[in-house]
Length: 215
Image 1 (cartoon, rainbow, N blue to C red):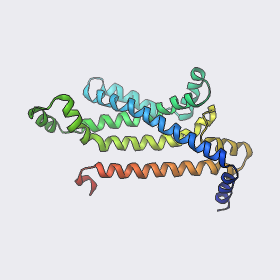
Image 2: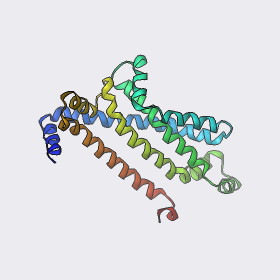
Image 3: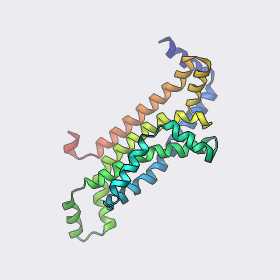
Image 4: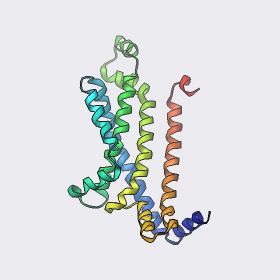
């Protein structure tokens, strides 16, 4: 308990540094998730449409998931240097796989007879995608976004290693000072952000799921 109180007091004594770090962390996480969604969603749909290349694409995407977060950050460093941008690129790469894979799984789970019925009603391919396939696949897609969100919020702490800022600065400073209170001043907000995002997205996924799945 004393460590928690000490972490809170340290954040209170450094309000500007804490708020700037929190703002950078949130912006970095949201930016990475937005880019990953804009890349992963259409890529997942394309892979679901072309089953010949699907195994290769999914295996390559899964391979990205086993690469350590810190390794991707340091691989980006020689090409992009230090700062926010290389951290954003690296974290976006980490966020793409769960979104792409779940988009693929969601669209493949749509029953063929439903698609054929929609086509028999005269709906175009674009209309089927928008009004039939996407709504049915959305709960699975949201599950991928949940996974990506938690990974991104946690991995964004590593941005501090290449000057990307965020709450990871507190963790690095705590290591340098051998002070657990300083580390917790960064780690606790990260955990709370991850839990908050997980709770919100879990609620959204629950509301979008079919009634049978909710029960």
